[in-house]
Amino acid sequence: MNSVIVGIDCQTFSLVLHKVISSFGIGISINRFCDGYIIHGELEILKLSDKFELEWSFSGADIFVTEDEGNSFYIEKDIIHVTDWEGNKYKIDKFGVDVS
Image 1: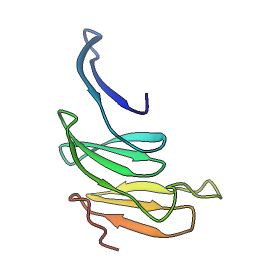
Image 2: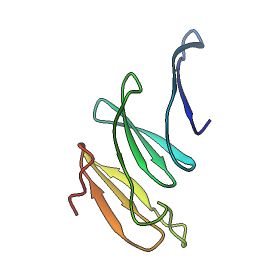
Image 3: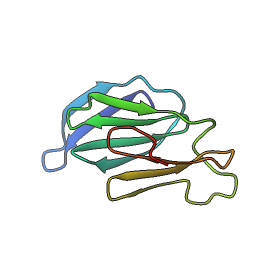
């Protein structure tokens, strides 16, 4: 499902949204963020609208995981904190800009 995202109505169990997305690598998590969603991927961070339209993407120098299995990704208020394999730390705002 790395290239497909779906929305399901949990009361009726019916499919309400289905979207094929273009992304690189493996999707790790989906998080609610600023009236949309953040997909934390292995190679990029994607911001999608509520309708699953791509608003922006962000890539770093290496994959967004760490060797020590530490917390390489978290969201604090409207800032996304992510660390790549090389130890580079990024702070990404709600517009997809690195504000580190």
